[in-house]
Image (spheres, rainbow, N blue to C red):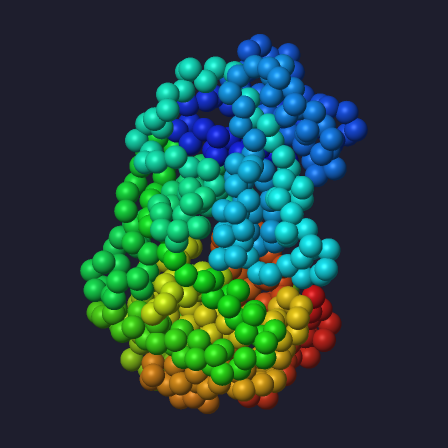
Length: 476
């Protein structure tokens, strides 16, 4: 994550009600080029002066704290840390070690390696990527109340620095109860949060069991910055759980969790009713996007032609599918495992009028990938996916059976499993482009696996894949 992204998110953290203008922030950066460097240093009387310290600039950080303690830094002082823990990053008030560890225990995978495990026992101040000393030069101008934002917040976490920012109070992680506020420093991304809010609100008419989805509460406008509130979902992150089960080789519990995922989805899918749509019409947007992204690749052209013909054949053989709301990112990282049920969170990528197949396939397959990565003791999606395809263990074998059973419940022959796997890989290969506007490493991996899968099963697909040897992407 680059410096500008970190600082934009820090400004949201320090000024949730958006009262401070962009030109009222002055950054003094230490340890970046050897000497302190200031942005917009000629500006007069900044509202906030932010001293930013890299991990190596610990001595300068302590000197700045001493200067603030003895009155050489005038204004209200706030000490803030930024940590990147892999999939999740966070910004929070320094000194809240107990609360940070409660957050890490619920949302982060255990540290690997002796040094990392040792460092995890130190106060976060010692290994934070960035340390900030934020000085409010005019604290009297900002009342204690934060407009119509409920409560005070001293913790922010996020997986995509340009996307959703989640704010809460650190005691939320200690007690397991509290309020979350979702927002973004990127105005374009706020539209996704607005969509998530409306979609989750609309699911109330489906009469699902409480806790099946999070409950959206309020839409809050604070001086033009939008927030969306919901209650914190207490429980364990399912991905973290599956990784731990893989390391312990606990196949039995992993199988029970696959059953729980299947049950969750069956309740979700059965809540939808209405007119059926032609299968080709439900896949048309995805195929169009796939064709645009991989337009220069001749293998992609063969894949697209094959899938279009296959879907046209299905239209003549099948009565069609009832459209559903698709989550589009239904992997274990977006499931909270509570005492009695699973809750699917993070619906900002959801779409309406969609086929249910990608969600189910990705939910089951990504759960197996997390388990296999735990077994392998290395988080390598490519290796884990190959093991899934090869049915390397009982968990992988059960996943294949569940996928076949699912398409059977939809009225398709289980022998068409390979065709639906190809459809899944096609949709997987465009998810990053749909979410972030450009292909991601997972997109490229999915396209490489799709090409390999297409070639390995070309006899069943009745196609000539002679061009694949020349054009096929290498697996990462």
